Amino acid sequence: MGHHRRADPPKTPRDYNPTGAYRTTFTIPAEWSGEEVFLRFEKVASASFLWINGQEVGYNEGAQEPAEYNITKYLKKGRNTLAMKVIKYSDGFYLEGQDYWRLAGIFDDVYLYATPKTRLFDWYVTTDLDKDYRDADLNIEVSVRSYDKQPITTPLKVQAVLTGANGKEVARLESQAATFASGSSTLTLNMSKHISNPLKWTAETPNLYNLKMYLVDAATGKRLSENTPEDARQDVGFKETEMRNNVFYLNGKPLKVNAQCSHMQDPDNGHAVNDELVKKDMTILKQFGFNGVRTSHYPPVPRYLEYAARYGLYIIDEAGVEAHATEWVSGDKRFIPMYRERVRRMVLRDRNQPAVLFWSAGNESGEGPNIGEVIAEGRKYDHTRWWMYGGNAYSHPAEDIIGPRYPTALALDLRVGYIGSRQQRRYVRRDVARRLYP
Image (cartoon, rainbow, N blue to C red; front, side):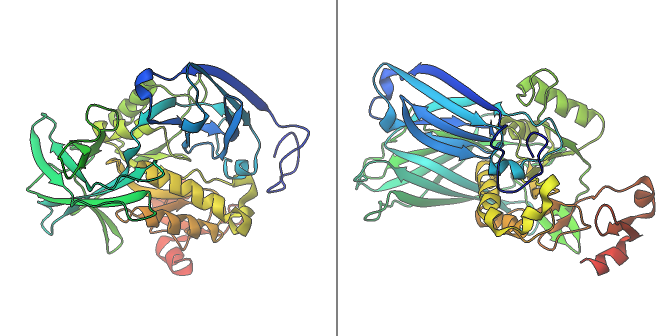
């Protein structure tokens, strides 16, 4: 890695490491007074240091995963200064060996937002279809977080409204009231509602509902987040995936995913892709009969998933894990936290996106046990989807779905797979390959 140097994980080059220095100023709106202020970077490659008003706020690794900082205590009235140093080669770069232009820098949205001291922090929306795939249970788990040293003692609850594409209300949900436990700054609230025969989401029928959630003072009934960006909104697609007899089912019907790989790459703007390019990409895919996209080889920009849900494209959402030139790090225990962190950030960001059909643990990152760590970590945060991995061997023991591994025209024609490394492939009948490498 680096400038004509031999890769030596986890070391980085001392004499050649391109570095970018960024600096800008911003002013906090007066109406944000008394609120918590957050700064979010969607994508920065590969490692970065952040300062606000000359004070170091934090450090981040992971080129394709979001980084968010609570900068409230670093701010002052009037003009504030933001500075960032971005380094191309870090130990995280060993998991960023994707086959595309390896450009460094800040290449997706950067934004500030403010929230009340007590806020809706996260939510997990799932749909469970009945045995006839007609009715559905809409289940919502909401996390509430307090940034006060002494969280409020009033009981809280969450209310939600589900509306259809026409804007008409379909259902209202409400959680039980609860208070913060002593010494805790987080609270989990649950809601569930039986929905009669909702329109189902598939690539052919991309039916979406809109969910809006509010944090409520249970004693007074007052919404604590009325008319603020804290109102949580979420697209909801009613669907359910299953695996039966090695066949993938969506909403009770066998599904063939005809997917293409797609990079977040622009001929003029590098890795910064705008909405027009995303829409063009999806339009072309739909015109040529593809019904899915494998995001190669990292989570895409967030709006890519939002558009996929609306256009009707299945997404195989792939973790930013590709060692490629140093595949042996998949067996290096020192890298386990890094493998876990990348998949955790992907799943927590994308698990509510209706278009995500199943997950991928990465691409060409070796066949070591760290890939199993990726999948185990991802399953902690989403129990509704299956896992594949784009490795070099025929399959990996941790995956549920075997992704295609460089089949030749002959291999496709004879329905054969291969076993062994890329240099030592042995092509055999697929049923034989499954027995040899289950």
